Length: 612
Image 1: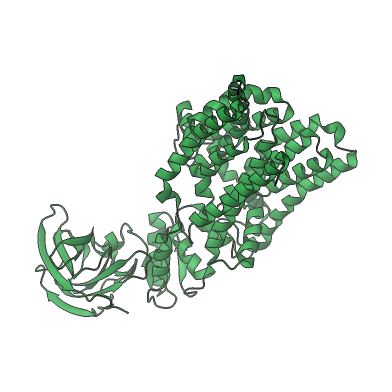
Image 2: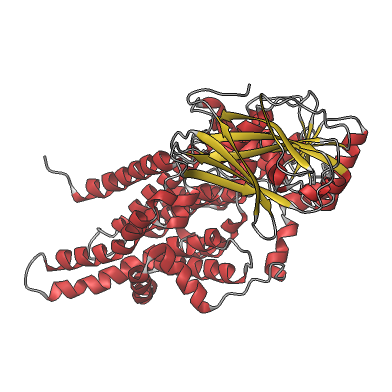
């Protein structure tokens, strides 16, 4: 069956979009997969229709809220990861179609889109809940509508669509303003074909209408606020939020002391697209300029995006630089066409196509090689580590009304399980990134009579309070009020004159990667004068070590020099278990010299658990 060239240029980008979606869904993170970035925040805020960080991202928030409630795919976090995969696939399809319509010797420039599809940053953002995939999809749609406008394909309708895309972009991510000079240039050139003034008024409505999506922020903010509690639900607070004034410092100053050279940006481009794409893009600049309004508009957008990336001094510049690579695909297409014409000098009819095919293979060689090399990193489908830790925290037998004090990212993870999944709704979270704020929060919660848990080491807490591990958490109590819990297995061992091992417990953790949790119960006879560390090891029948974990007791929060006479310290070590062992070997040694002072072997049963 004969398929026309025009139909082929439509079908192949569609297949590219579907293949990209399938690839990204296959490698998407299975649930929450990060703690200290925006992805986790979106996975908590969007299912609850809260207020994300500035500027609020109303388009993404509302679309994501609808998506997470309409499609029952696993948990809401995974649904948002899949949404990013969908936006990324749309980006590839629309870009491929737009590239295929460039006025070149051949319309086979759409495979250049594969470079973007395999770019590490594009792939990474397509597999987690983030705002960038939607922004790139809007950029691709903008280029498609602009091409239709300047080519005269129903220019009035194309201008309407272009205005709507700009409006949607303004309701999503502020980087869309970098495309405004290009939009103004294209509309000015085609002003005679864009209809009477009333159509311009309608386009203004299309462009400004989506901005009303920001109205949800004060409507919702009055009830839920933001995760960090900094949103102020008032006129001044609303404008401060949607204008993201706190982020201006990355343009006007350099708070992170970031310094990059021209070579750093070249390296960024090569890392995303490879040397061959860079060379073709440079060779194609003249051809893009000579091609007419569309090529010049793309170059104008490329200039503004590159200038922004150079002046925006943030550490994660990759996501802000990737639009440069996206736009560079177009001059690269002209460069490919220009170099490919060398093949036309050959007398063989297929000379151009063969030579262009060789060039495309060279362009794709770097992304393909990089993908194979980084596959284990890019495939996040088995990335359950963060999910397992959050679920582990919430399954612990904390007293009702307990308070968990931790960094904002850590308490956000707790809130995902509490607020989104419904685990332990009675638990209270207290986020504080500064140590003095966390210490003050601990003191206030204890004074109110709450059971208090911390998520990480905290300066000053070991000298004032007694600490005990409860799973991955650390319970804080007043000295002398630690409860003196009984161990599941008694195994008396006088390790030191000052420290006595009363017993132990163990369990296989319900993690996706097998782990053994070893719980040690230390009795303190007298305050130790030296600091000791513990090594918990799984050993085989012949005594060889399978895995070992070494740490300061109680998750590195409670050095032995702070232990008080008469208390019983509950100490936890999570040891990976790639294979079943026979015994648990515990070694106590001096922290400063590594000298062993005691060891004890603790048996455990295969296939069972000693703790409930």
